[in-house]
Image (cartoon, rainbow, N blue to C red; front, top):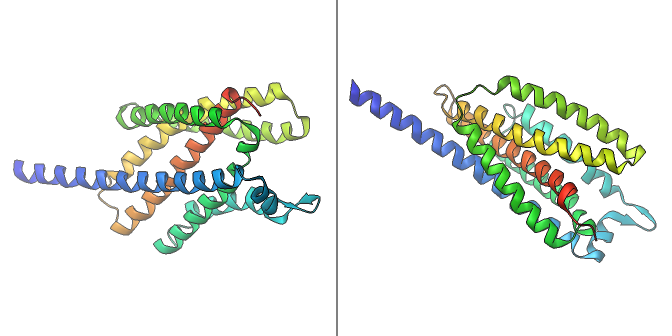
Length: 236
């Protein structure tokens, strides 16, 4: 009996490790795609203008880059059961590419040194909270719900600030963003740990959920990075 229990535990641990390998493969893959595209476009003024500027006005692609990633993210997370794995990967790559185009704008606003240093700070904070979320025994469900409420408030305030243009409000939103996105990282890591240990999932479900987990962590990291950049970054 003891041998059977040990074998089951070992098998469950291997499934969990494989799940998280896939999660981080998707996350780092998305970061790689976005980072390369953002750098190539953002550091080449001619390329940037050819993509985003038509004559003296904003090109239609600008609006595609601004809004389509939101739609793709929702489709991936809500319709994954109806989509094939190949379709999900295609949408995931498209999402990463469009986010790269969107992130290219930071190279026009911030010094590249500030971008690089902020990236490493964000990576450290993200890693710390991911480890905390994975190892803590405390149930973070209520904490996660509270953070999502704060996030909704931030989102509304951000829209309002587009019209107001208040630097003070922008700074406050960025500070709240650091708190919210680090906290949500811990919350989602705990949720992913529970999913990885579920024996009821099929292999296909595990593959799809690992992609969604990679997407969620990617989104959290990017938002944490951008929040820190608004606080720490020196502008050109």
